[in-house]
Length: 385
Picture 1 (cartoon, rainbow, N blue to C red):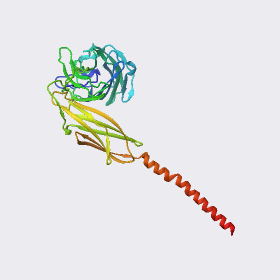
Picture 2: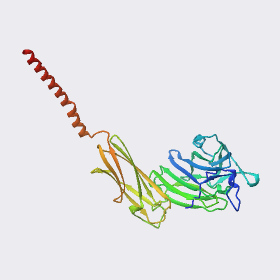
Picture 3: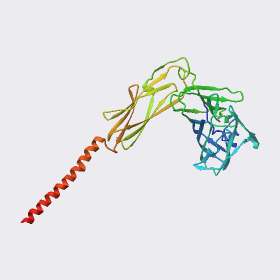
Picture 4: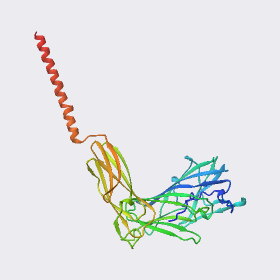
């Protein structure tokens, strides 16, 4: 699935248009080689909310001041917008059009049209850039609802207007409260460009899909990222007919375990990472035996078509343990895939606590009383002499 670079949601920079045929790297210029994007869709009682967070590290050659634009849906929650440069908030405004600097000193006013309608722009100015700086943009907006489905579009098609050298995008899509729903991830073209769509069924109320893609050299992205979550098409696997569920090979599953202990309670977070979306799992309750906390999960793989992106599923357990040292062991289809040691220091078991109480308080009082009695008898005997 070629997602191409997420070119800073259209940080529309004048230098990015100065493309020369022999040497297409403009000077002055801003470079963006990596982006980290998180898009979260959360089910609410009134519909669904989309939360977007992006981190964009830039290198700078020759600029002291730039004006940046970032396309967002017209129903963006203005109270949620944050723009930070090197961790410090900067003032921003909402505008309907962006001013593009063309080669030769001319400028062009543009709008941003998408499959979900025309977007507006967040606009801000950055001064005293230095050799490098990092931009962080956060915002949220209601998902668009239609026929029982929810849609969200992230503006990536800045290649329609701008030049870029190359960029690797690290994208995380997270979905909360959509168990059993069908997820479609699409690249939506404009101006005659095609559309590519992949689907997956969300198996739990918290699902994540990780995407990583590198852009073509000297070519910007020309399609937007469209996410649709709606009713499942019915029985079958992730990609529809043409396959079946079979027990997965444990070697194809990567398990990550994080455990924290507070008092006698161990909170265990298990993340399973799959090479594609065609996996499902059945969790068993933890079992404590001989110093081990066993977490067993049955994992099945769909033999038919499935979305070819790294997929993560998470599960959290809370286990009450006696003081001591344990190993948290995760087993997939009976095969150990992860092991993490933990130590429980706080608290004692009810049985151990009763024994301590009996020996510590009542018998200590009896012992003291006996000492007092012996001292009194000795005093009386010495006094009689």
